[in-house]
Length: 247
Image 1: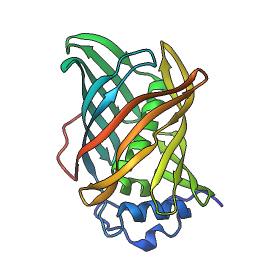
Image 2: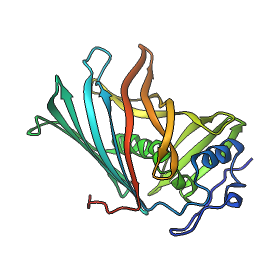
Image 3: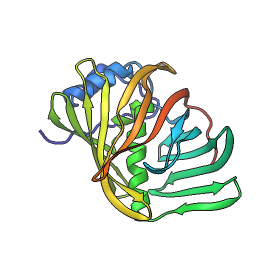
Image 4: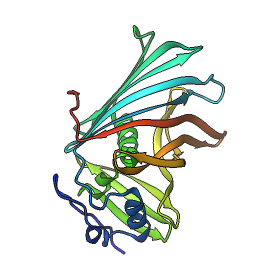
């Protein structure tokens, strides 16, 4: 089967007929999410909390984050605060705009400890944006997204933006729940950028802003040295078609 791409216009309401060309697992997933009868999502605000670590031998830190997304064009602005023993020790920023990204980390909000950009960072951030569309799933019907059937429980998704593409596989159960998102993604491992297997298993779903979204999930690197779970998140707030700051 050839790849399938749709184009839902801003302001247009999603119908069940619009989902028919998609691979069966993706039709189930989007129906389960509740996009049918909903309008296009132009912007989103997402907040979550949880824990994060930078390596298997590193301590867990508490994380709270607020992220703004745009879909036309694709972009996001992420701001996070990391805590240890209840005290904020690190502030993180990540942006994706016009096909490029930049990652910043400041110790105590003052001293720069991370400043990442370049092609590898762009590709890794594009993959992150593609995965985080699970929090505004109408965007999986965008013309920049193509779907290729693998089997009745798996499909390959590709996101193309500014002439660059990233792809992943999504796994969906019989009820329409996306179970995991798995890709080959660029990451930085102790200063050594490389492509590794990256997965985001979803643990539970809940209702937010009229849609059924993954509410609890993890980020896992499948490395030759063993699996590294580096983040656990709990979704706390979602708002659609809201005002977003310039980034």
